[in-house]
Structures are given as structure tokens and as C-alpha cells.
Image 1: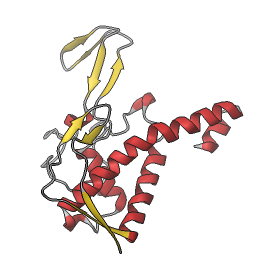
Image 2 (image 1 turned 180 degrees about the vertical axis):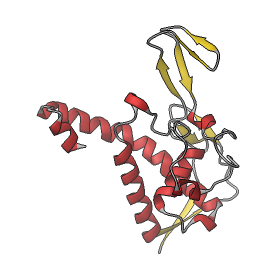
Image 3 (image 1 turned 60 degrees about the vertical axis):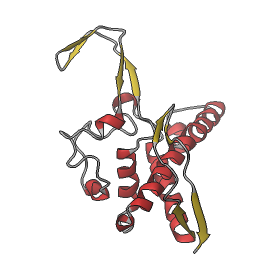
Image 4 (image 1 turned 90 degrees about the vertical axis):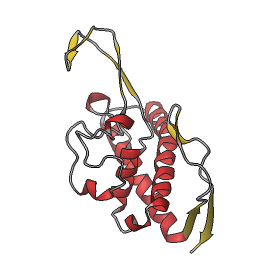
Length: 186
């Protein structure tokens, strides 16, 4: 990230502002992705041997931290037979898209092996896509893999099976009642 900002000709203040934005904006979504990954691993211990990147991507498929994307149409358009006038706010829900049965086989099933191959174009949007794709995608995935690897090496996390876990769509998708867990050193 720093290299890209330097190469783009940002001055020291702009670089500081961009790095702070990345750290502040990226921490919540990465934390939510890790929380959902821990939840799914607890519910599916057979998946523990899957590559970390597959575990995280599959958890973001089922529980994308950014569950709703909105864009303003710049020009008149038509999508799937619907007229969209310029200026219209258009919303796409990765949460719904990632569970669409025309795009995913058995879409409600947690299956990290799905990510052994690239998903179909525009079927997987946890970081949006196109010119507004999240600039922090690579940093977020790297950070999430590093944290998950460290946690798995150092502690055992057991979620309380009686604690209710249900998604709540606020700014980000979070477990409504949090995750109640016992953490013990390995």
C-alpha cells in the first residue's frame, strides 16, 4: 500500500491520511470476517485443514462484512429489463448474491474448497468490484490470514453452543449477540 501511494505521487500528509483511513476503515470489516470465520470453524471442525485463504473467503461468502453496496447510476441504463434512470441509487447485496443458487452449488453450505478455483465473475463481491473495488483487499486478506494463523497456533477457541448467533445487518454484518467463547492457550 505504501509503495502504491508513493508511486502515485502522494505527499507525506496525503500518505498519512490514506494509511490512517486504511487502518481505521479496515479494522472493523477484517474483525467481522475473522469472527465469522471462527464461528464457522467452530460449527464445521472438519474444515480446519483447509487453506486459510479458502476458509476466510468462504466465510466472507456466507457472511460478507459489507453486506450491501450502493452506487449512483451516472447514465440511463437498463439491467435485466429494468430501466434505471441516471441519478438512481442502485443497491447490490453481496449477502444475497453469495447465496444465489444460480451462482453457487448448495449455497447455504460452508465449503472452503469452493475457493480452490476462482468463482464466476461478479458472483463474489466481498470487496465490491470495478473502479470502486476496495483498495485494501490484499491488506485485509493478508491481515486476516496472519491473525487466524496466529490464533490457531496459540489458542483454542470454543464457542458456547447455547449462545445464539444470528446475523445483524448494520453498517457491517455482525453477530447480533456477539460470540461467546472460551479461549485457552495451546
